[in-house]
Length: 151
Image (cartoon, rainbow, N blue to C red):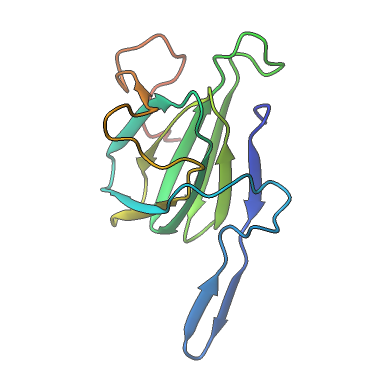
């Protein structure tokens, strides 16, 4: 696992009314601080990648559908330098993934329906000076190809 990344298996509590799933609590060992909560969606086979933050920590959970979340560690001083991690998260595998600053990350929709992702970043989005540093998902120097692995 990439240095600084934290993963928590999420517990779904169903009953006759529906279900409940806690994603992040302020008494979790890895809770840092609250910036905001937002929802984003990804259509099947769409790639939303690559970016990293210099300050912000992302706290990601997929609550509908499935995504392949991929992380890459470009930090030269890290013990996991150049390591790649893949996580299949969503309705079939409810996970929370905390992504520290400096880690490239992105995902691809891998379910037949739209995936809905919740992020609880530690910082409020700054529209004038966003802490978001992007590269092209397909044309870059990262050792990763966004394609389905058949076989």
